[in-house]
Image: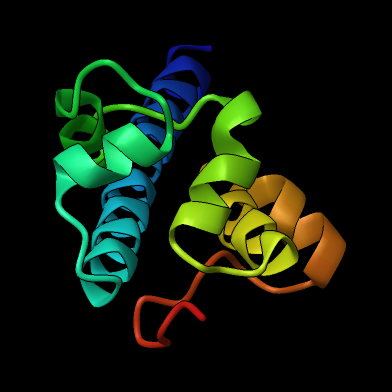
Length: 114
């Protein structure tokens, strides 16, 4: 019983570590797309009608998550096809669902994302 609980707790910790790593990787990808467009965080925040550009920093550092209602605006601001943007988000924020839909583990650190 104790061993089972310990294994469950360790699994949760690994899952949490994986989730944090995936959010950081997503943030790096978003930052790269923004920089490729030549945009500052403040300019992206303005394009998204956000009051504070610090939210962009939080997302790019893997701390914050993009609210779903901003997905279309964010993809447009970064000039990324909405479907591609959605797959990248799914791979990084919902790896289990991504695996169910694609049959692939979410995402391989050795492979570039889009």
